[in-house]
Length: 272
Image (cartoon, rainbow, N blue to C red; front, side, top):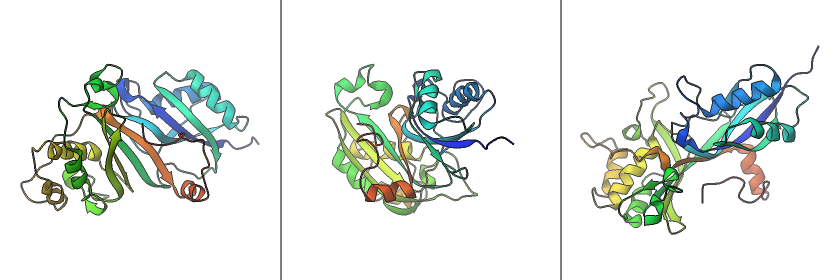
C-alpha cells in the first residue's frame, strides 16, 4: 500500500493582465489551469488545484492561496522550485507549506484583503504601470473618498455593489476595515478586508468612491446604496487592472502574527 499524498498550501502571485482569471475555463490560460498543468507534469498524473477564491480576467494577486496534493516524495522546497520552473512568467509561487490533508483554502479562510490602485500622477499612464492600476485622466479628492469608505465597516447588504446575485448565500458581508492611503506619489490605494466578497464588489465600490471624490455624486450616496434606496445605482465599476487579491487570512496565521512575525518582511501584503 502506497503512502498517502501530501497536501501543500501554495501562496501565489500573478499578473492577471493576459490571464482569463483564476478558474479553469475554455478559451484561454487561467491561473488554476497553469498550476494544474505544471503539477501534472511533476506528479505524472492529473492534479486538482483548489483556490481560496476566484478572481476575474485581468485581476492580479500577490497573496492568493491554493492547495495541491502531491506524492509523498515531494518536499515543500523542491515543489516550489519545480513549479516555478514550469509556470509561465505571469505566475509565481511565493511559498509552499505542507498542511493537514483536510485543509481547504476557501472554507477555512476567515477573511480576505483586496487592494485597488488608482493612478492620478501622469507617470501612472506609463506602459510599465498602467496594466497594474487604473490610470485616471485627472485627480480626485481622496478625503471625500475616505469619508465614503467610513460607511463600509461592519455588516451590510452589498447587493447594490454586486455584478451577479448570490441568492443562496445572500448579499451580506462583514467588512473589517476599509480605507484609502497614498500610493508612493502615483495616486491612492484602497484597501478592504471582509469575511466575503460579491462578484465585482470591490470594483463597484472603487468606481463609486472615485466619482464621489470627483464631485460627480455626494458622499451620502454610499450609505444610501448600502441601504438599497430605490432608484439609486452605483457608478460604473473600476477596471480590473487596478485590483489585487492581497491576502487570504486564516485563524492560525493571525495567532502567529500576534506572537510576532512568522514570515520574512514583505512576503505577504498589499502591493506597494
